[in-house]
Length: 313
Length: 299
Image 1 (cartoon, rainbow over the protein chains, first blue to last red):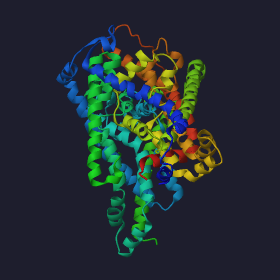
Image 2 (cartoon, rainbow over the protein chains, first blue to last red; image 1 turned 90 degrees about the vertical axis):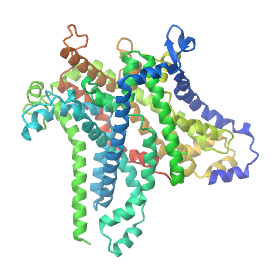
Image 3 (cartoon, rainbow over the protein chains, first blue to last red; image 1 turned 60 degrees about the vertical axis):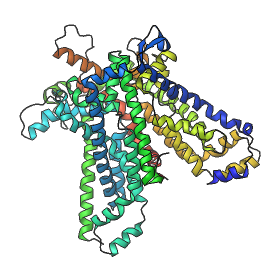
Image 4 (tube, rainbow over the protein chains, first blue to last red; image 1 turned 180 degrees about the vertical axis):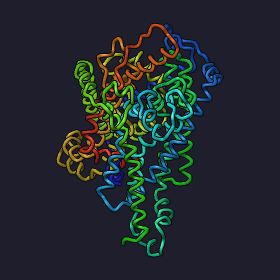
C-alpha cells in the first residue's frame, strides 16, 4: 500500500513536523470526548443512588442494587425478549427480502426499469420514523384508516379493528414496516456485491447446462457470503439495540401494545424522560451497552476464525 | 436467447419488484391524497385513494399557521445547513489526519474512533452530560451537536477514500513543490474528494433533516419551542394525540393537551415535511447509492 511505502522512506519522521495533522484531528477528538467518551464515564450513574443535590460524585454508591431492582421487574424480561426477537426477525426477513430483490434486479434485462425499481424501493429509507408513523397511521387509524374503512370491507370483513390497541398484530406490522424501510439500503449493498461477480462463472455454468436456480444457488449465493457475514456480525453486535424511532413513533407509544412493542431503548427513554427514574433507566442502559459490546467483540472473534478478511477489527 | 427460462425469470423478477415498489409507494400516495381530502368526508369514510370530496383546507390551514410551520421549516433548514457544514469540516479534517497512519499516534486515534462504534455510554449518560455539564437544553446547539456532528461511519468512509483514491504521489509532488500540509490538503486532496464529500454531506444532511430525537430530549415546550423543526412538530402532534386519547379512555377530567389538528391537516404537515427530500431525491440518488455501497461492501 502506498502509505506504508511512504513510511519506509521516512522512517525517522520528526513528529513535531506533523503538527498540522494533530491540529486537524483535534476538533474531532474534542467532539469524540464530549459526545462519546465523557458519557462513557456516566455509566457510573447506574451504580449509584443518584441524588441531584449531591451530583454524581457526591451521591452514595448503590452497588448492583439498581440492577437487582431492574431484573426483579417483569419488564426486564419483556424488553429483552422483545429487543432480541425483533432483531432476529428483522435480520432474517430483511436479508431474505434484500437478497431476493438484489438477485432479481440484477437479472432484469431493462436497465431503465431496474434503476426505477431501485429508486422507488430506496425511497422509504430516506424518511424519518416520525413521517413513517404518519404513513402507517393513514392505513391503521381506527376511525379514518384505509384498512378499517376500505380494505376490510373489500375483503368482506365486517368489523373495525382497533389497531393501536391490539398488541397481537404488531410483531407482524413492525417487521413489515421495518423490511419496507430498510430493504432499499440492504438491497443496494447486496446488489453491488452481485454486480462484482464475473460473468464467466455464469457462462461456464450455462454451457454445462445449469438452470438459473442452480446458477443462483452455486454461484451467486456463495459469492455474496462475505457481504452477508459482514452484515451478520454487525447485526449481532446490535442485537441489544433497537431503532428507537420504529418502536416509539410507529406504535405511537400506545400503552396497550407495550408488551410486544417495548424494547430496551423505549424502556430507557420512558424511565428517564417520563418517570425521571435515573436508577432504572441507567441500569437498563448500561446493561444494554455492556452486553452489546461483549457481543460484537465475540462475533468479530468468531468471524476471524472463519473468514478473517470480513472481520471488522 | 429468449428461452422459456429467460422469460419466466424476467416475468417473475418484474412481478416481485413491482410488488415491493407498489408497497413502498402506496403509503406516500395515500398520505398525499389524504392531505387533499375533505376533512369531514375523511372522518366519515377514512383515507382512500379516491376520496369523495377533495379539499385544499389542510393546506389553507398550513398557510394560516405559517408563522409556526414556516418558522419550523426555517429552523430545519438552518440546523441542517449549519450542522452539515460544520460536520463536514470536522469529519474531513479528522479523517485526513487518521488516514496518515505513519504519523505517530494516528493509529491510536483511529482506534478511539472505531471504539465509539462498539461501545456507547447510553441515553442516560449522554443526556446527563449534555444537560448538566454542557447545558445545551433549550438551545439551538441541542439540535446541532449531539450525535450528528461527527459520525464515525462517515469518517471511516472519508478516511478510506483518502487512503485509496488519492494517489500519494500527488501529495508527494505538492510537498516537493513546497506546499505545506494544509495547502496540500486544501488544494490537492479536497478538490479530488468532491464525490465523497457530496455523498457524506448528503447523508449527514439527511440525518439532520430527519432528526426528531434531539428535539424530543433537549427542547422543552416552555423554553425551547422556538427551535422546533418540522419533525419535532410532527412528533409533538403524535404525542398530543396519544395523550388526548389516553386521557379520554381513562376519563381524566381536565385535559392539558392542546386539541391536535385534524387528520387531514396532519397529513398535510407530513407532506410538507418530506417534500424537499422527495423533490431533491432524483438528483442526489446516485450519491446516496454510492454512500451505501462504499459503506457496506468490504473493499
